[in-house]
Image (cartoon, each protein chain N blue to C red):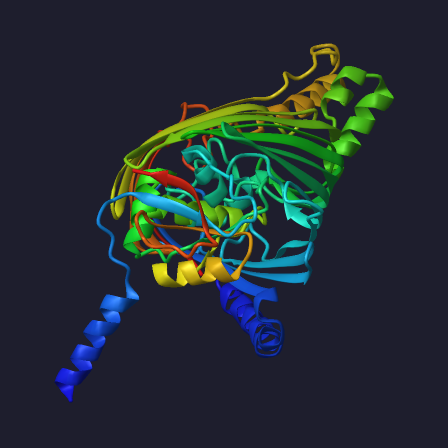
Length: 139
Length: 399
């Protein structure tokens, strides 16, 4: 019984997390305008709550997630602590709200697929449904 | 006054219990409850003085507090926000800090109407949310405690965003009426036609902020007003005018910060001008740099302020008659008693991010002032050397 539970747990773990081969990040959106291509600064602004010209709303992964750590490091350029502090300042001054968080990369894909105008980050190379658009890829 | 936090906790819990089961279940995403709390323990290594209320005994009731915020989305573009704060500090009133409606007609434009925190300086509106900044306490030299309060009015915010930068332009107009402590005296203050403009630009890793604030302030100090009227009746108009209890207040502010994954540098300066007898012309600034080594950030800071009062008038002659001498000395005594709080502080500290939303900070500051100045110290012994070390340990929580 114990072995079965362990096996089930391992399988769940393997299927619940998406493995990625490199450290590249991709930003994916559900948008009708499939020509949108952002630079790093625009992605940074978007995920720090900047005004959303394309009508996009962002979602994020939880603080302990490795893809989030990679995104913070490569795109935002700030530590998790600093990002948390920033959102505390924004929330308690009524300026901006931190992005909604979903638990795993798989749920990010599902959420974006289900919600038009949503955008999130994922490991580069992950297979995506056809209806989603890659709007940024950074090494 | 430590009873305030349990009292506020009780009120907050009741509010929480009242709203959460019904509204949350009914509206789910529409109501968001959040909060912040801080426990700040301090010790001043000098038996002759107090600084921000800290003396040479360990205390936790000077800056500790709890805040609760509720945001309710009434319509897609209309929300209401309330924030309740319970302070342990005797000089800070507990109660509603924010209560405003937010109307967002477009992604880039936002209006807030109601009671809001005055956004004088970079961290003015989050001075109570210690988690939002690296230091255990914001430097008194640039963030004097008497300075921050709420206003009732309208604030508009417009954001310009492109591939190079994001610019926030904020403007507000309103009024302020409350008890304030200026020059060690508590008085009722009122500011009408209170307005300001704030511009913040984010470019790459840089953030720049510049702001200007102005209002027409009047304070109630009966003894000074009566004395000023007396001087005016006798004909000493210059002296009478120098004891003004109303006039224009202005605040100028500039700040810049640069931050990367590894380190940050932040600097801010401000200038305060008021046409009131008790408010000195003040220039303050701080510069701080820190190094990030997850989960720690260590930092050093230097802050300084220079305050200067208007010189007393000289239209009351001395040596002509004992009555005039008495009048002149009485007049000059008012100026002699004004505390000069020019000082500087060197700070060294470390922030430890225990987990998302929870941080512990340890900090030591050397505060120094000139021999004749008060330098924000309270003391009885005139020989006190205006120099002391302040140790702070702060636990910061946002939830």
